[in-house]
Every structure is written in structure tokens, then in C-alpha cells.
Image 1 (cartoon, rainbow, N blue to C red):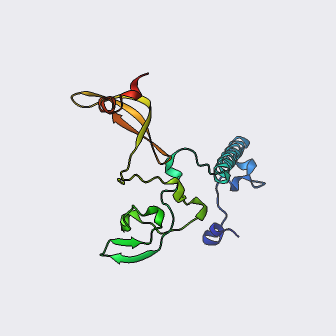
Image 2: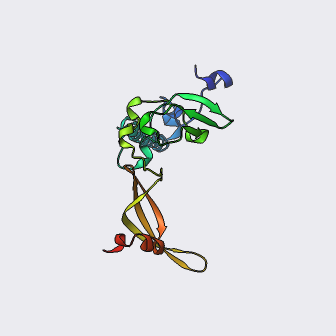
Image 3: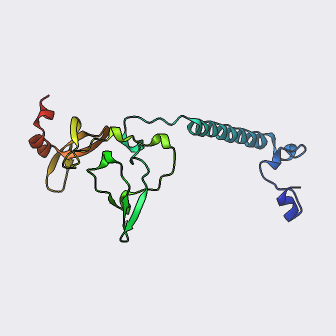
Length: 185
């Protein structure tokens, strides 16, 4: 017994209930035929949507050159002590001797996940002065941004730092001053 029938004491009179034998003659063959076609169309579209979503779910996750899916942290390190309310001192290896061992909590993450996704220390190059240097690789695109009173030429720049590539829009005039070799072509 269906829940509707148990609640109201009669069968539900919906288009699904119209397909029972005996009622088709009362309602007319056109109405029943149209309802059956609509139900078939809906079920076909549902099946198509389900197969499309299944292909997305079963797909293989690929990591390309984009940096947003690359690992952001080096590896788990032992916490030696808590310093204040928002900083921790870590037990860093000798390869990272130039890096200060105290980090703010915003720079730390709990190590959860696959250990194979950890960036090896060999791939990290630390400058003597501990500076963070992005190197512009190429100009990918140009556009003119319209502001209220003026137009600004912008360039989409591909940057590289420690094998991580990212793209940003920069003011073209400033980029021409700092990196004229990118605009020789």
C-alpha cells in the first residue's frame, strides 16, 4: 500500500496513476499518450544527466602545470614548543638552517593526507637573503581596463617561483619599466 493511499484511503490520481488498465478509456487516448510521452522524456533526460554526472565522478583527477592543485607545504615537522598564543617553534632539518624556526599559526597546517604529495626539500631553493623572488616568464595577453576617468593598459604575466607558475594582471607601463625584455616581440 502506498503512503498516499494509507493516509487518504484512496489511490493517488496523478499522471502515473492514469496508466492503469480501465482508466485509459475514460480520459481519452490523447491525454494518456501525452502523459506517457512526457514521462518517457523525463526519464530519458534523467538518465542522460545521471550518466554525465557519473562520468565526472569516475574521472581521473589530473594535476597539470597550474599551481592551485600542487602541494603548498613541505612536510610535517615536530613542534618543539608553543611561543605565545599564535606561534610555534618547529624542529627543522639542517637543510633549512637559514629559515627561522618560529612560525605563526596561519603558516601551519595539520598534516592530513597522502605522504606522496609532500614536496621534497631538494626542490626548494632558498636564497641567501631569504627573499621571495618571482620571475616573469612571458606576457600571455593584453587588455585595456576602463576606469571612470581613464583607460589603463594591462598585461597578463606568467610568473615562476620554485617551479610554481601563476598568472596575474599587471599594469603594462610598470612592467615595461621593470622588465623591458618581455616586450621586445
